[in-house]
Length: 323
Ligand code: UDP
Image 1 (tube, protein in one colour):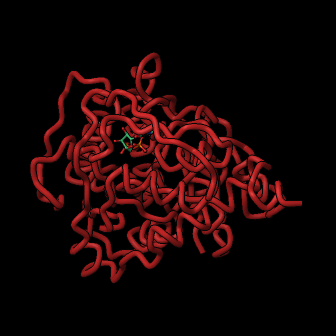
Image 2 (cartoon, protein in one colour):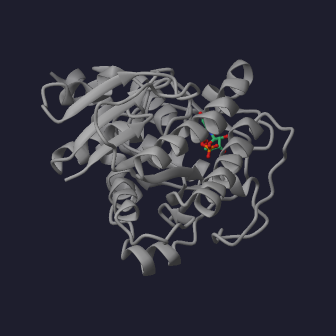
């Protein structure tokens, strides 16, 4: 069993990762400033003797820890476009870049393995489809999304420089769109927006004409491959694409959610945010061959589970109304 630090541990993915690592018997130190994460996401872990939480902003170095750290998962960063754009843009770049440096320094001083959760956003609005790890991307460096995209690209660059120059044992995964329970209902991502809108009987907001595509991976599949990547042999750095190759238009997604929730929500169209990628689908050949992994949960099943979560969370689900 290992001593593991998870930065961004109160966020959607971070909280699932902490729960998995705690259940596996590791000692887990969760670090987060709770800007987009929430204590509620990790509440169930507070009575576990092998779980610790430190409220901390990773743009500052972490003080001295009393325990040696064997592994670091670096997840800290707002991940939803409305959360990272606009007035939080500079903070987002700082979190990506200074956060990466601080976590890499910690890895170096502890001789720990460190995993970076990078993103499909490093491919920008991709000209290659599906996206392989060798594709170098099509990112607009002065767009509203650049704080996230370029921040994550710079973090990858830092990881590989610490690997080459400092001998740090690094792992890099590029996460495509993910969804599942513990998503923040208000963070503006498409699956949480559509489900919450449908459950509340509000209009479903499609940005643009809904012909843009995304490939959605259920959280349990993603956590499994992230843990596998951490356990891969030293020197296997990645980057590795992780996501579900099933590709859907945003309009198809809206129709699926409306059909499943069964309400009367109409679709309304809003303007497309600037530099919104038109197509996205991972090529996961590398993850399959090196990590013996592929996603098991199809969008239909994952949506059912996520709808059940939001029904309970919002307390306005069909089951509740039927009582
Ligand atoms: N989107 C939408 N309606 C919403 C929220 C998002 O049509 O209420 C679109 C958004 O413009 C994008 C896609 O859904 O094309 C995925 O958006 P999300 O913010 O979930 O993720 P990302 O853009 O980072 O892939």
